[in-house]
Image (cartoon, rainbow, N blue to C red; front, side, top):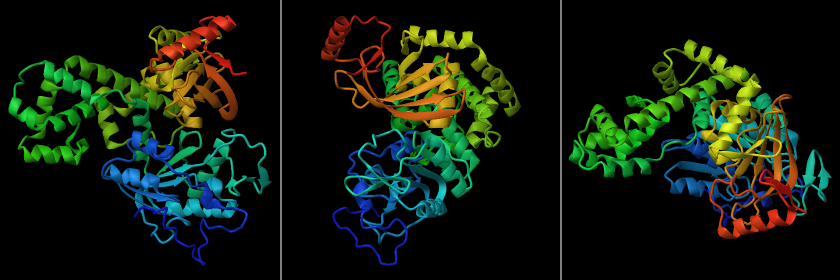
Length: 487
């Protein structure tokens, strides 16, 4: 049941959780009106945590915009909020979202109570997100308990990433996975955690639109009637094959695909044969297999580096990946250890950064640091993906509208979220710096102006290019200057 923001349910006199306890704190005013999914929900959709067949419960759902968006996509989603829908039942679900709730609760004990209550409802994954230190300026805010009161009489507690990690782990008794600055996922089962980590490192390499174009150019197929009847199933099988670099097992195929094959009286084996004939070339399959082998090396190298306690309990899909691409888990672990040694080879890291710049994945600045659009990070050589994986372990992933800067000399990774890509000079109002040597992270306010059009993935407009040329000429800036501070 979604929340209805227009019909606010009065607070129950006996309610103790997430209720307004002090007249000066108006918690409900922090509820935002959203036209797109919130960041934690969006991350879960992108990484397959939320998908068809998964149930979702939003604990502290505000005005219910996330719930409506999920329901429109066919996801079974419900929510509860103490102000907007207090009468809704709090129910168990595969995925529970505690999104930007803890940071608006002024009572420390009640925060833990909310976290415990959300974890009790969690079947597989709990997502916890808060505001973090350095994201927004606090000048002019009134100190109140361990946070601040705003001009709208709302409370905000700004957590550091280690502080939030410790609160979650000490409350629920499991180590959370950092998904992004201020966002953690807690998995009930190690298999789900390992699958999530691997899928995150795989990224998005395949597009079914490309395969359809190739199929149409090949002319008459060997089995035109069947292939036309099950085209959606073939595309889904091709996507699965490219994702794992191998043919999928029957239990990995979505039920909707199996149902379509059954309706059309086509066996899974015949569909796989047709898919290989119609959708994929041998070269594509070889490329996907090589990419998956490197993904597994990066995954297990990071697991070794971060002393993961779940790496030895992979999901069933990962077991198949390892058998196909390496033979055994012992072999992949040994190969990953050799791969990990590359992080200490300065020449190899520098060569990888130069290679990335030569292939237009990013640009090297005057200090030799690699600056790139985060949407190109999946294309990087494996050793640089190890760098970003180490940063993600501490700080989570950067937002998709971010730049990433890799500094191999200082062993540092910096996230620079862009406010708006479409303006002449995209602005980053904050930066998250991850020190890999000291295993620390810091988010701080900045105000910088991107001036190198070659860094941003999308081609910039003519007006943007002309504005950049003018600024370069006025300030006598060399091509190696990629960003400058705004006056």
